[in-house]
Image (cartoon, rainbow, N blue to C red; front, side, top):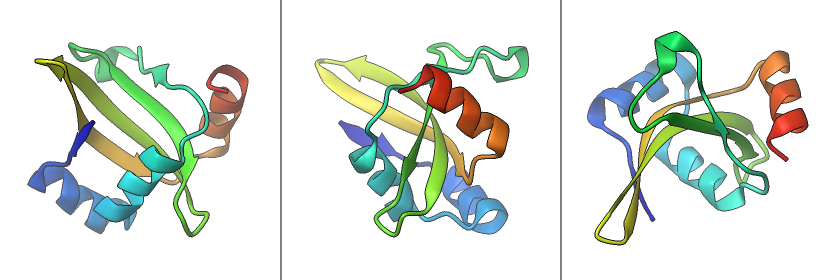
Length: 98
């Protein structure tokens, strides 16, 4: 799996959310639940945006949103955002993502 983070998203993660690319990668490695699809109208994409909540190696909990594509047998993940989840997002993920 290739995890890709554009320069624009990296800048947003750093300035708005204080999240590093390493932390995002750690969340993919540490994820122990499934993914959920973001079906809100303003967030709809093709392919659909998916998300999950996982911890970094330093136990910081992050919500990671991404788009997954498969080309020639290679899974490519384009990260859209990552940030500390709010209580409602945690509740939804505990209920539907595990």
